[in-house]
Length: 140
Image (cartoon, rainbow, N blue to C red; front, side, top):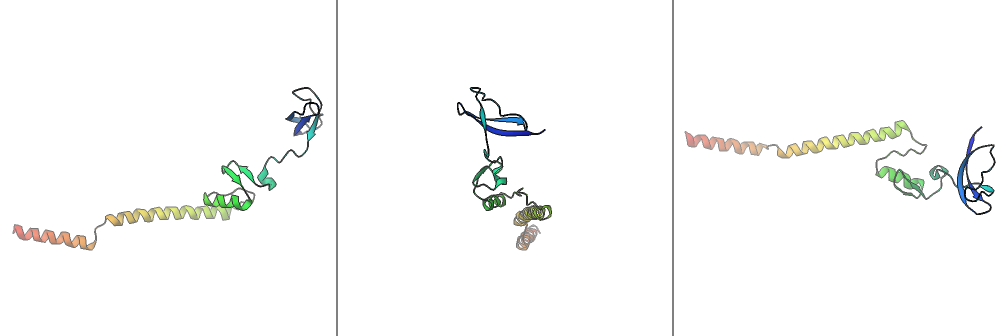
């Protein structure tokens, strides 16, 4: 014996409410007036994305998605891997791993360049050497 979740409308007062029943139970009475109810068929899909209905609010992304392409674009911009049934571990994780490696390489390069800016050049070393030689001549 299973369950069903339906929206119901009261035939007397028009109240609309949701109820969960066993599949073989009769429609419930209206909680407002106690009148007979009618089940509303097709009260709307619970997951609009899976139904392919656009636009719909995507709570995970925090915006209203206009199309499948729009959702993929937003995921790419945010470096997210969309979980939409077409997830390929090797392909998608490979992309994520390459992006991570690129970020690490970029950080290492930036650190190296910061060090290079503080390194002495051969001209700097030559100037220091010359100053030292001049100082030694004065002392002698």
